[in-house]
Image (cartoon, rainbow, N blue to C red; front, top):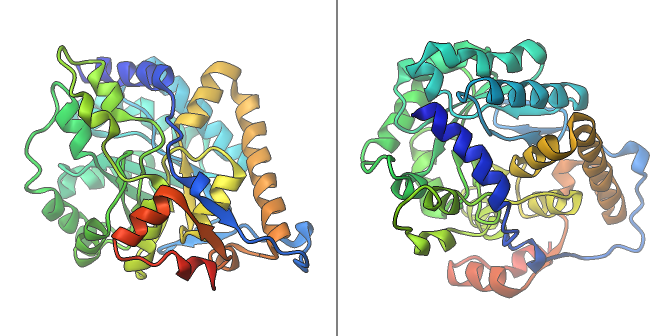
Length: 348
């Protein structure tokens, strides 16, 4: 049943695509006529929590536990990560916790990328023991705990009780020895959620905003009677990044949710993110155009980012986080209503 669901998620993710309603069109950089920088000296290294990354983008959690097909996908994604020196995350490892036969669909990432930075992944229902098993399975450098209450509610066979999620996360944070990342899966993260996680001992979040792969849409395709109102549920990526970075300065933010270009990476960082995860966009390229095309796309995105940073006079990720931007439209409205002044971004 779980293996079948994993395969369906891949098929529906490809067929539904990404909505691109992430809010980045509301964010504009302030042009600098005298940037005083050189593309050849741009530094793309970054840091999330205690984790040093060579580049500010990584291949975010996608799949595993779906037999040979997901094993092949993870093998190729790991090759792309190795060739481009990117960090990479596996999909939820609960399938392998429940069925050891599925372990190979995850372990292949470490086999193909023995020296790379790899994130383990489990849901918020996981125990400390399960978290340690997931980490050991792939010799992980960090652990992602995904929170996906709305997806579970729309999922026909999904969870309906989320009372212990925060407690589980707090226990895991106390008992693992590698960085913990709490990740939304496409509904965005609010300032209230970030505050709860910080109090629970979490200092890295992946806001997983609305605008990328829509798991409500995917799960609704698996229902007899659709919960169509859930298809528009969530906080857009741009709004979520700003909301969390402006209210929880002691949390490092990873941006994800419909990000596809170097410009969107740059805007995410200017809103306060330290790194960006990309998943569905990369999966679509891999399955439709092949591994070499995926590698070329990653290289192109990184080159775009360097060009943008050069034009803005920002030599590294830390200075890009302070680049002046003007926020308009729905994102401006959202932040204003949530008590965050958009002018703080434009006059720094």
